[in-house]
Length: 126
Image (cartoon, rainbow, N blue to C red; front, top):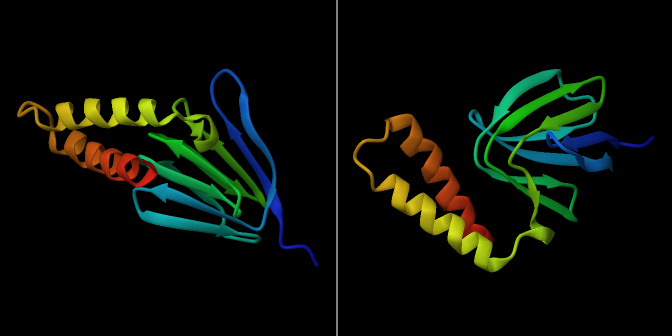
């Protein structure tokens, strides 16, 4: 019996990924969430981090929403990009911008929390 379930990743202007997978790892505010076939229904929010679809597909997202129901995983994010399409120079630029923002004394603790995850993930990718 197949352990695969349907996965769709959608940005506002196009479908980023559509296929099947045995496992998807998501960066959520509750922590890393691993979704397998027959997982309980789930609705949650993404924090900055890597989304891993199976062993071969990885995506970087800064935010978004996730819904898993009846073995259909839907990820909606305006900031998601396949790691295959991100150049090293772009990662360095995003990292520099995030480090500048986090050093600003006027940002909130929530913004610092989110920027810390963004910086940690970008360093991991680079």
